[in-house]
Amino acid sequence: MKMSKTSVKTTVEWGTLNWRKLARVVTKLQKRIYRASQRGDIKAVKKLQKTLIRSWSARCIAVRKVTQDNKGKNTAGVDKVKSLNPQQRLKLAKNLKIDHRASALRRIWIPKPGRDEKRPLGIPTIKDRAKQALAKMALEPEWEAKFEENSYGFRPGRSAHDAIEHIFISIGQSAKYVLLADIAKCFGKINHQELLRKISTFPAMRRQIKAWLKSGVMDGGELFPTNEGTPQGGVISPLLANIALHGMIQNIESQYPKTKRINGKPTNWKPCIVQYADNFVVIHPDRSTIMEIKGKISKWLKPIGLVLKDEKTRVSHSLNKSIDEEPGFNFLGFNIKQYPDNNTRLGFKTIIQPSEESVRQHVQELREIIKAHKSAKTVDLIKKLNPVIRGWANYYRTVCSSLTFKKVHHDLYMMLTQWGKRRTGKYKRTYEMYWHEVEGVKVFASNPPKGGRRMILQTHNQYRIKRHIKVKGGNSPYDGNWVYWGERMRNLPGLPTRVQKLLKKQNGKCSICRLFFKPEHKWEVEHKVPRSDAEKDQYSNLQLIHLHCHHAKTGKENQQRYTKNPQCSQVIEEPDEVKVSSPVLNQR
Image (cartoon, rainbow, N blue to C red; front, side, top):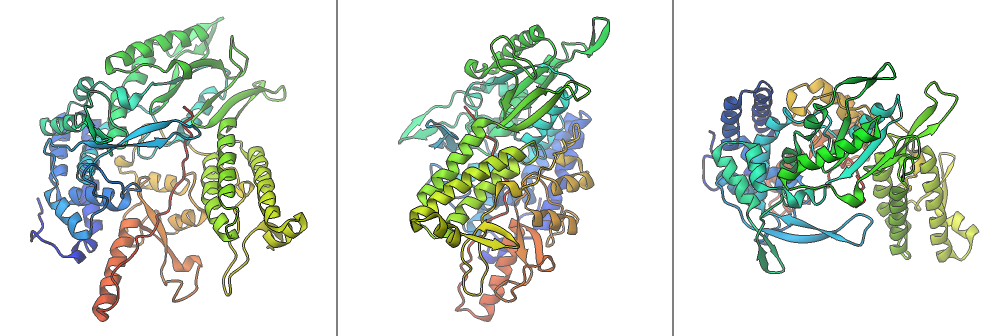
């Protein structure tokens, strides 16, 4: 095992670590773990996992993930430590180990989307987050080789769009009944003993996971025990929840034949279960079978300590009105429904579009932003609106959203008109001041600063509909098929156009470390020649790089600048990363 040559490292050393070399070591180990798990070689899996958690490469990457890459990196645990400097990161990596110790969690309360209620998050200390990232790097490849193909939540290389596309394929050729179900307090109710039995890992890892599960939580200065559940907020918690739920799909589907003769014709009789974390749908042509499956799922969940949420569990039909439900259903913010159409061979069309609740929440968010910027500069209002519009439109551009986009665009236009009239007093003056002609089109935009460019408000209807292609079967980013995953990366919903073009230009690789981008990576677009030095925003002057590669590059440049001029400041602000927006609307 490679160790640091000295116990105390300089500030520069963390920034000059060879991340390419470290990442290659970890990637190779994870690929070997994945393949050993695929062939059922448990002995090899555990041996490789032990090698990984002891490796210097994995420990450095684990620390980097939680102190630099993660968007919640500046959230403190019970020790009140929000961030680490480079020297402290290096020290943490040097001493990081799976040691069956865990600090209590710090509980914070965050609002539920579109609701007045709040839900708890358990925030571990930075040290525990790094240990959890290390454990996750070892465990995730093993379980990715085992997880069912129809499970899409909190898994690398899979998304809500894959789940929606799977549903579309399942009901595309025939109308069916659908059980829409939600597990009540999934993260908070998982039985610890059953989860540990299911993980069945080596003793040191088992003791460490148990320590995290039993660590307790600090809320308002009081320590509460955690006798059940995996706390929302931990790095490893989504993986543990997926492990707890693993096997449900296979168990239910195995109890039904693939086909059954109905009126003398063979009919697909095996239920289709599509799962996204604690939300899932069961699709089948027979209502009584759907109700039977509901009972079997409840029975399967019982040993894990989980139950279905009655108020969120309903049975509907994709085309026809059922006993007490209208046709169609909402799932992950989408409305999925079939409409009669005598002009088609099937007699119906399957339409997926944003749900009414999703649209309402989005319009309300835009309204609140505009309301909060009554007296703000136009450019400041646009800066707040654009990321919200971009994220929402990118999430829904994979389905039949054109009409919805036009409606929301009109609603936003009316809100902005009222915003402008309040400032000018007249509609005519409002249009003259805030709507400008750009390339022959009138757009809401700011006045250009001297020698600069206007900031233009993005519109919903500028986003063209682009069908999402579902991930292939059991493919995983750990399988080493870089050609396949590189192609998928370029077509991820939510990627800005220039990121897609740069991914294609760079063959899916970071231009600094030359390693492939993975779905979970953070990256950013950088100017090769700084715009302050040469005002060039052309693609020839742009490159797509990992966020941590940018940190390392900035550190080197800053050190060189400091060497030439010791009076030059070394304080460098860490830039924002490019975000792939996926606002899954959890309407609970």
